[in-house]
Length: 160
Image (tube, rainbow, N blue to C red):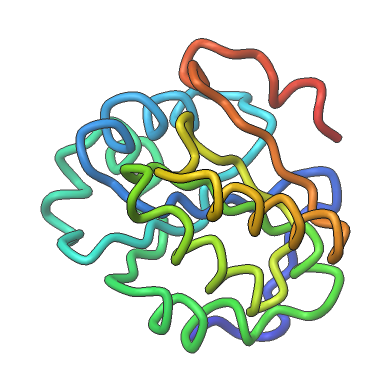
């Protein structure tokens, strides 16, 4: 459980990776493991994540203090709900899942109050889900980026 006094620097985005399979571990995680990176990984949400699996990854070796959760509910109940409004406003969810899983996960985090997302390409598997996500993003003024080559991108440098 995270203490409500736990403060993050205002200039750093606090990022949670949702999905730490091959892509999350080998590409997304390694980017965040670089020294001096603009964003900080604070947690991983993955149903099969363990501390030993995480410790074997580059991110786990460079940032062993990262919180590990096996579900959205664990993440929310043991981390997110303890943040103040300013801290919540600096949270980013990076989805590293197959498109058939993205819609449901994005909706969970939006309902919790997250306002910043990095979505994979392709985002979803059908037009209806894409239109619904686009409508909700617009309605709730959510900031979302789609990154097909996020690992190689300097895109985070430009998002402030």
